[in-house]
Structure formats: structure tokens, C-alpha cells
Amino acid sequence: IGAFSRIVVKALAPYADVDLWVPQDSDFDLAGGRAISLSDYPDLARQQMRAYDLAVYNMGDHYPNHGQIYRYLHRFPGVVILHDVVLHDFFHYQFFHNKDERADYLDLLEAVYGNAARKEAELGLEGKGPHLWAVDKVSEYPFFEPAVAQALGVIVHSTWAKAKVEKVFAGPIESLFLAYDRVRPRPAAAPVPRPAGQRLLMLSVGHVNPNRRVNSVLQVLGGNPDLAEAVEYVVAGGIEDEYLRQHLATVERHNLQHCVRFTGYLEDKELWGLIQRADVCVNLRHPTMESGSASLAEQMLAGKPVVVSKAGCYLDIPDDCVLKVDPVQEEAELPAALRTVLLD
Image 1 (tube, rainbow, N blue to C red):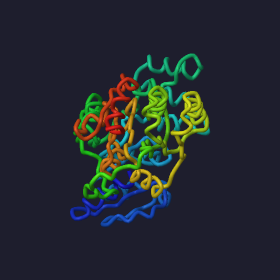
Image 2: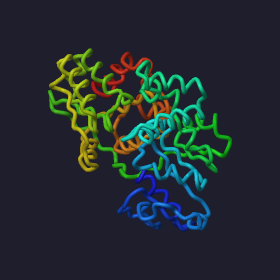
Image 3: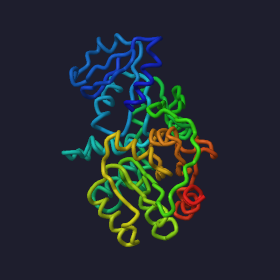
């Protein structure tokens, strides 16, 4: 979202005076705007906000970055750029991180989704059913509605996200592809023959959680020895200890220690180096939570073949630009997709 904001501010600068309010001290070089830290102005004065012709709010699911933004967008309505359609993690953090405000969580949930949702959530909180923020339930209760309820207009990054918002928001909505230019496309080069026996680098990036489908890739490698022998599969991104242990158990169960590696969190320079060396990127999501995918933009701009889920924001990408697998038939379709890019 930071990279996106630089591009937008630069584009607006010839036509408007642009201030970018950020949640913490920032060294942004805005090329036409100025960055102001919200930490220096913990309570924006109404007079200060009224000086602007328009407030535009970047809204995502990461509470530490977007908590203050969420509070202001209700006090001073403006245009909301919805970067994530699923904001349930945002509200889970707000109500349950270092405290237990389940009553407030349940009240808001009921206001948005009704009494039946409240009762279902209560069962989850009592340990008698799944939590509504669990990966197999969260798409039913995405929780973006409170973020757009008082908006003057909404910007999303895919027609899929637009269709979701249109069901609950009567104001103007625009679908604009995620602005992204951090990676400069390079001229196409002639293929370089790979030395015999050298494994192809297959890469998944981003914070590792269930909806990124890493476990499906591991299951496919375990069930298809030809693929497991052809690749080094690298998973780059932060991962919780318990979830890492589960994945490592899958790796051990299928004897994949020779071809699977988890790097943990990487700085941008290291991650970009991996993307440059990758032969194929696997960018699966189920359920899809993003309005648009910056990681997909980065991988495609780097000239990499990418395997994606045939769902969500990925539906807008032309079928001849990426390889798509149906999330419902993921483990059945994924082997053929991987063979297409790895073995041909």
C-alpha cells in the first residue's frame, strides 16, 4: 500500500496539493506531496480536516497500520480505497489483541450480519464451533461493510471486489487495477539452457497462512515424484511456529526434505533476489481476501510464469497471462499446471 500511495501521489501532484497521513514516522519520498505522521497529531482537529477538499483512506486488514485510519474515516467521511475485501482479521485484532472485548465484537457482528451470525460467533467463542475468522468461514463474514458504510465513494482493485461491495454500498464504486511500478520490466532474453540435473526454483511469497495454500503444493509434490525431483520449492514469508511445525510434518511425511525450504520473513532486497532467480511462482489463494494482488503484479512484471487460483481478483487477469487452477479442484488441477511450466 505504501508503494501504491507513492504512485498515486505522484500522479495527483500536478493537479492538487496532496498530504499523505501515515500511521507512523515515514521516510516516504513522495515526489510531489508531503508525508505527515499521525503520531504527531493523535487527534486530528476538525478544522484541520475541513481544510481539505477530499479525504482518501487506504483501508487494509492490518490493524497496526490501519486502526487510526479506520477511526478517522468514520469521523470525516471520504473516499475509501478498499485494498482487502476480508477485514475480519482487522476486527479480530481490534477486539481481542491484549484484551477481550467480545461483547463489542458480537454487537458489531450482529449489526452487520444479523442475530444468526452473532449466535454462530458465540458458539465459536465458547469452543463449540469454528470461529468466524477461521479460513473456512471468513469469506461468509468478510467484515468490510463497516469500513465503507459512511464513505462518499469506494475504490477497489478488481471486478470481483466491486461486485461484493455493490451488494451493500449504494454510492459510487470504481474498479481500478492496483497501481504498481516497483519492478521495471526487462527486455525478453533468449532462454538459457539449464544444466542437466539442476532443479528449477519454484517460489511462493508472503505471510504463510492457510489461505495461501502452501499445504496443497506440498501434498502435490508428495504425490508426484517427478515434480518433487524437478524443483526446489521455496516458501518465503513470515510464519507462525505452530503452522510451520504442521508444514514440516507434511514435508517429513512425504520425504520432501530435499526439495522444500522455508525462509521465514525476508527483507525486500532478499525477496526480490529470490523472485529474479525463480523459474515459476505459485500465487494461490483460497479463500481470496485481497481486492488486488501486489505480489502477482511484481511476479508478472519480473517476467515469471505464475500459477494462481481461478477466483477473486485473479479472475481479471487474462487466461493467457497466468495459469489458473480451480480452488475447488486445487490438488487435482495443480499437477498439470506445474508440469506445464516446469517440465515443458
